[in-house]
Image (tube, one colour):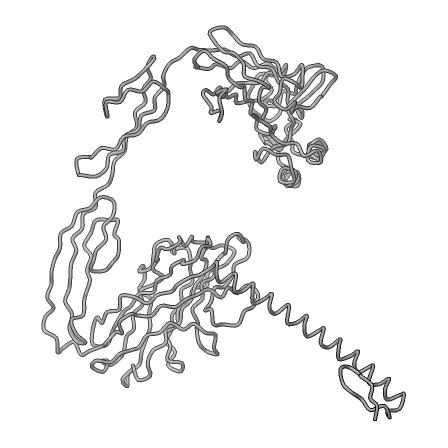
Length: 539
């Protein structure tokens, strides 16, 4: 018997035509179903890959530590958190559930409380602390419930443990002798259980917080599977303390500069005081160590000096011939570092620069600009336009700044600048609060005579011809670099629009035309410069 091939299957040739049509339709439906399944599988793989990538970048550890029995019916322990990944995290809320072994109550009733003030001081703003004991689930529960809108996120520095809480477990009767509570952090979601959660802003997202939970949970939106729980390396053993002899108390005196790490606890202390650590000697008894700690501080001082030609600093005997800030580290009277700083000015030739430039947005025509300072509510003469900063750069790469002058730019474009520099050639660099920075096209010679440099009469006066022609033969600095990132782009445009909607006025960099208000008159020129991709140019 002959057969036909349908949907990769052999079908007898005796089938009726309408039956073959049904089979062909079924084949098309089967292919469509397979395609839909493949699409779902692809999306699932993307989701899993995204979760794995997030996990690789974001990782938090919660750790149980420092357990101690303080009476026949009470014991305490700490919970720490540490950013162990590579992502910057800002903590706004947290919870942890600690499971314990059945039978711990020994016929009594357990209670679970947070010891006020025991957590790291940085977490003080994370509020609404709650802690309860659930006998039904054999779990100690703790959570915060700070408002996400009013709580300032606490930075979790990478690699540094920070204490979340010290917790106390109390019983109405004594614990059974040599009982081990088997404290374990709860890492999985489950009905009635509190799991360990760190609610953080995960960089670069600073607007929507994510819940960082145990890596074995199911992935979901706004969940980061990056929380690892570390339980006690040595189980806590509870005992009847009445069987113990009086503890042995040892006292240690220590002095340090800035900080001291105590081997008994492994903790680093930055304040003077008395610290205590109880250490179990067996399942019943413990000894006490006391640290009497004195922390001394490093000191610092700053000296300002000026000299002609050179200066020898008595602190270290070094002779300096250039202006700058210099440091030396000595030892103070308590044996800590004494950081000395010298701010030195080597007096050189005073040079005067008569500089002329216009700002495009402030242009008023007829070789003049608006009296911007006066318009923006600053007490100033009507002949003053705005302030500028002028730097002189070395003519040799990488062209460091050798002198700076702050000056008032007059409405006619002229400004007088004074510099203390050696005779030589320097690039002139003009900076303004909302204009694109401009350098002279070439180095200019400076000496004892007054130097005049006019940017306004030729675009060739600016490096890269980077100016705008406001009138025939008159050139000005481009307006619009409000964000000061050396570009006129959408960041500047968004800033101006936000200030327009905010009805801002007065001394505002976003007031591009200098009339004292941020309004729709400031937008057109900025939009044109954004579209022209204007940016700062220098050698």
